[in-house]
Amino acid sequence: MSGSQVATLASVQIFLDRQHGLYIDGGQQAAQSEKRLTIYNPATGEPIATTADASTADVDKAVMSAWKAFVARTWAGRLPAERERILLRFADLVEQHTEELAQLETLEQGKSIHISRAFEVGCTLNWMRYTAGLATKITGSTLDVSIPMPEGARYQAWTRKEPVGVVAGIVPWNFPLMIGMWKVMPALASGCSIVIKPSETTPLTLLRVAELATEAGIPDGVFNVVTGSGSECGTALTSHPQVAKVSFTGSTATGKQIARSAADRLTRVTLELGGKNPAIVLKDADPQWVIEGLMTGSFLNQGQVCAASSRIYIEAPLFDNLVSGFEQAVKSLNVGPGMSETANINPLVSRAHCDKVQAFLQEAQQNNAELLSGNAGPGGNGYYVAPTLVVNPDASLRLNREEVFGPVVNLVRVADGEEALRLANDTEYGLTASVWTRDLSHALSYSDRLQAGTVWINSHTLIDANLPFGGMKQSGTGRDFGPDWLDGWCETKSVCVRY
Ligand code: NDP
Image (cartoon, rainbow, N blue to C red; front, top):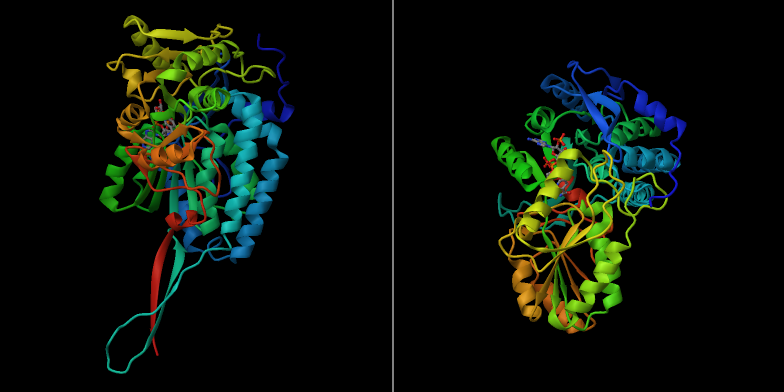
């Protein structure tokens, strides 16, 4: 049962019904291309809105608008404290529109309204305010140098951080607002201009947030949104000669394509890519903590989370007990629309993605894997996949190595922690991992040896604005968040003075 549904706000319906253009130079502009993209409600499969499908020429216009604003220094030239103040006002405006943004997100992406309120908007506000504060903390160093000529000369030297220029932000569909703002905020805090492309599946919240940025006082041209396909709009944006940096979150395949194209112009790139994230459960772990923590770690946002735990390796003495605990938890999940007050598993983002996840499960079924599934959902034309545990899957199955990005998690019996560690690291990815134990020495020994950008001990998937995040191996390059976050959005200039 999915329970009663949240009533759609009038302002949300008005926004859905609009003839959206591109957000360029501080306002809506009609795209040159007349092609439109249709946005669907994942809970029903029904169309709810359309947006512009930007062409290469449209993208060029947006980038040139960002470039003009950058060289005119309408934003980069502001005092850091002014940038901070305007960004904090921007955060306040986003907060005032929490319910509107949360509903738009749930209607286009499918996730629970509670997650939209708490994560897409609530956590985004934490990141916005944290990053606004970094605007006034950009620092270089003073350096002693030993230049020996001409004889008797003395030098003073220092470094300063300067914004890189125009940034291209490419945003995936799993957390469109939150991941979008992880690109917008460091760009703006450091004084860059940005052109951002949401996924064509989920473009609505960033279009709305751009209006709030202008209302907050961010100058025209500094924050632009282009909606369109990855193949045309995304390619045109990431390969534009005036783009100094690309910040990309999405699949490893697309990330590699962008890195190859960026190499031609030596454009700076940060890539936050996929993961096949392991959790190691040692025999002394607290079973209740494991089930609570890894149910959230695996099924939050229907598993459409790059950091999600998708392979759980359990030491033999705890295995049967934990499998039955996880099974009970999965069977108690309430599957329904995101706008339901009570559903805690919701549809996946699109028909295509739903089919992709189902194909992993069909392959497992055909190979006689043991699947323990929960409720299949209300059916109809919604994009539902039943939350599923795959018990001891055969090593040959694709879901052992590939990112499923759905409500599917493997439970694997291991003889001991060393076997778990070997299997955990046997992947091309290296985004996140966790280890579950009451023994601190074990916890530290495994966290040292896990090949992942973030390792949690007795938790999984919990991120924070002050904790750097990013991948090892094929999960990406560069780190987001943390006190040094803006370094990736600035050039270091050395200044050397003879006296
Ligand atoms: P993609 O990597 O294709 O999409 C991510 C973003 O990149 C979207 O905005 C997309 O636009 C854009 N894009 C696509 N092609 C290009 C291109 N050539 N140049 C520039 N931008 C481009 O991921 P998918 O949506 O296809 O998802 C596939 C898989 O990727 C998922 O199943 C999951 O495994 C992984 N993924 C990982 C995410 C993460 O957070 N690390 C997030 C999303 C997906 P558009 O959507 O309009 O095509």
